[in-house]
Length: 284
Image (cartoon, rainbow, N blue to C red):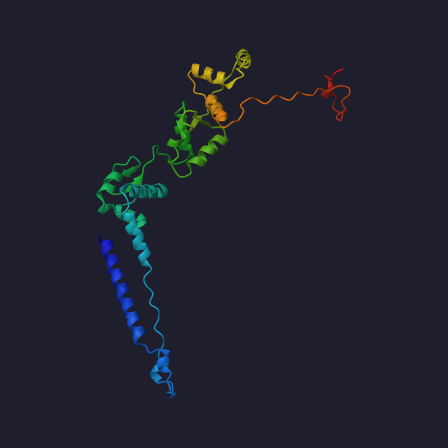
């Protein structure tokens, strides 16, 4: 209400100034009245000395007051988001008065906004000041690595994004030096951070390697997806849906025939004779 009263008083002052300027303009003689038709009259000293009145400049504070008024009339959710964004970007603690100075949200006059922020899981309130509260209280890269090593099954990157300003850069730095892994989860399509402890060396027997490499996969993706589902895994693709959509659009789903590989024979002109190992299997 105080802001609206200020705007009303300011508008009345503008109207008063405008009416004053209009009356001044009407009282000044026009050019035609100063130039008589028959008798030339010398200009009086007062007329020649008169200078035009300076243009009245209205206050530039009008736009700012209108902007503040629009913020305070916005829904409570929009005001809450504005305050949380301020706390997240600055990482400082503010009193309600300081918040009002920075983002024009008057929490003392809006109980709904004040109570919502006081009980918000992303906001810490100590009884006097509000500050941002991340899920994990971290300060630097070393603390980040210690936290990730406490989760051998992996920790979601989304839970680390707001820990401190440059946490994403530190995650990439830890990945670059091989201290962590960043892998995507097919179910949620989110990145998971896993610790990579160099002390844990995993050796795989040659028999297990041969067994793995000897498994023949189905040639049709539908069969592969069915086998994954049988083993409790969710396929990353949906071939049936993709083929159905292709048929509706009139696109053929048949695989293109593979081009026949040309074999080298004696009649082939050799241009790499200096590499004899390439022609060991030369057809006769």
